[in-house]
Amino acid sequence: MLINSYRHRLFAASLLIALLGTFSTAQAKRASQGSGSATTVVIDAGHGGYDRGGIPGQRVAEKDMTLDVAQRLKRVLAASGYRVVMTRDNDVFVSLGGRVAIANSYPNALFVCIHFNSAKRMGAGGIETYFYSRDSLPLASAIHYFVAGGAPSSNRGVRRRGYYVLRKTNIPAVLVECGFLTNPTEAAYAQTASYRQKLAEEIAAGVGGRNSVTSALTTTRVATGENIPLQPYIDQTKVAKSERHRSKRSHKKSTRRKKSSSKPAESKTKAASKDQEG
Image: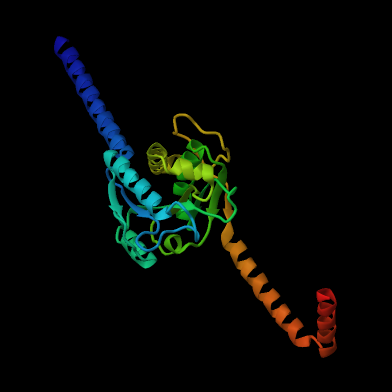
């Protein structure tokens, strides 16, 4: 009787040890996945070299801001266990094709392209994130969720657009616009090291949370970051095409109007102009 009782206890203890071992292995696996140890992130700092970025006359060079945020992001991700590849790590020009080639040479990677916006209107501002392929939407949603939620700028949303670096990459790819350098307030933020560090940390949080994106369409930030809403997006691929078609049609109409204009009409125009000059 004592022998049977001992055997039962020994069996129970062995079973408990086996279960604890399985749990520990699963927990270690989740921790490893959460740290990003098996994930490569290709970081693309926009512009560089002779390409300053932005618009003519822009005071703050976009290429400097993007490189600084990219280098900070590299350090944050590397500290979390990610393998990081940079399309440029200094002030050099890399062609769009070169950037895409680097990204596509890592088939299981993520591609994060960093830019800052610009506009002729100084009041334009906000954070916006671009993607193209459907596989890239969770990454775009997560990054935008953290960057837009952590920035003092307005939320311009997630947008689908066929930028070359997004359209030609074979891996999940996102382009994040971190604010307008032509907006005095946002440019002042971007020129502080603390804000650029915050941008890097928020982008990194988005990379880490890409697998936690849900279908709930809400703009409420969850403090734990475990349940990230799928961001509503604007599909600009169709809008761009329709605008091109409209511009072509209007050009054709204006050409026909010029051809159909008569000489008497021209003389009336000349006469009217003389009267106005007088």
